[in-house]
Length: 329
Ligand code: DGY
Image (cartoon, rainbow, N blue to C red):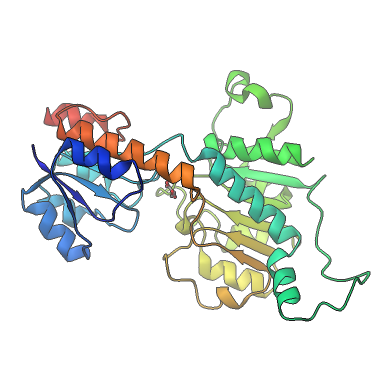
């Protein structure tokens, strides 16, 4: 049985599933260490985290069967380079949809109603009783939620927003577009409106991002997009940090080009763009979209099952690049 390298232990039942599949070594490594271990030939599969960067340099010398990423996203891995090397990559889809949509809705509500400012106000002892104009926020009901993307998490967010009486618009593949049939719209047919990226940006009171990070979506929200938004609009990002030009976002928030931002992800995680942390019109979370006990446990199960399958010589249940498996096998 070939060894499994785990870069950070994963929650139960993940480690037990891995241990039943092969010898497990847990090693916290920097990038150079990861390059060295992946090239050593000692391991069949690596169980990785979003922090682990499998770039073209690392993959060019990697001697692995597969990488099982503990995440649904896989932008930390150069998939083209992995495929070229015959390395199968697997992920954890489907189990974090609702928890991430909950965080998107939480950011919509908490930015609209200034929850962080209000909490600080009470804790600081400044609350001296009810006042007619204390910490006034904006309404959510009747406002337009614009969804960039129309995948699982965008739909789950739409479901929640409709429950809050919001008007929902979406652009399925910004910055361009694609056809969406009534069949694909399903429960949303006649209830949400398909618009262009330009219209979505200009008409949203809350613009919520639900796109994977790719060359097309890198800095999707740039200076131009920010200046096209309403001055009263709020940007929500639970997708990936580099979808937003964070330096331009700080400038737009400072100059009140837009009213606020609710962020769970950052362009250079865990660093924040200079000035972002000092802005009161933001709610900032530490990438916790999937952070519930049950979701992280389900992610661990899927991740370990992917790794175990590859160690045993079978295609993992959730491959990202199954062509790599076929070509290696
Ligand atoms: C993912 O899975 O891609 C999330 O960003 C973290 O759970």
